[in-house]
Image (cartoon, rainbow, N blue to C red; front, side, top):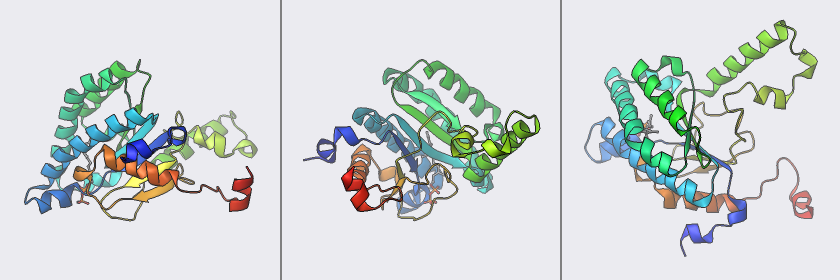
Length: 248
Ligand code: FPP
């Protein structure tokens, strides 16, 4: 039986976040330049988006480019930006057919104008869709996002719109770029690295973490189903005891 068939349809995580890692190592393994790995990574993105839609995941958030990635060699950054433009142009129609909505989180002002314009046009075109929401984290880092949230919250306190005593976690959630989605129940990282790398630090407080050995360009929807299957076998206690969870 495949992992897809083994899944409990009642327990599909509504939000899955993925740290797509290992493109560079995959390219080196194949004797090629790093961008070759990124190019093949797009096929994995395609497969995972399809798979997520097939099993009814509502939100899929992919870490495509971090704030820290700007420090990579200019050549790789430029090639990644060109790849993004190409992927947006190539995939919009298919995403639309699959009823996928697109979103972005991150400091998009840092993106080259062409990437920004194409990205926001694509987001606009797909906005009437009602299926999976695919969010790309681009020029994103969690500490950047939290600082932005604090700045905006401080402004609202200064203006007298919010009393400091009323600040709680639900209110803070509303200042984050993920305000319209639930927190991820499952976070996957590929390539055998055991790090979070400044991704959704606030939102993953109670996420299940799944570290996969495969490099991102080798990851396919079957691997996503396997990770969801593993997730379904976990006991999520949210700080309570096993006995309390069983009694519920
Ligand atoms: C991490 O691997 C991957 C990236 C920094 C880029 C991810 C981009 C893609 C998968 C392609 C474009 C994405 C979309 C959404 C169309 P790495 O380069 O850090 O690999 P390494 O750790 O082996 O060096």
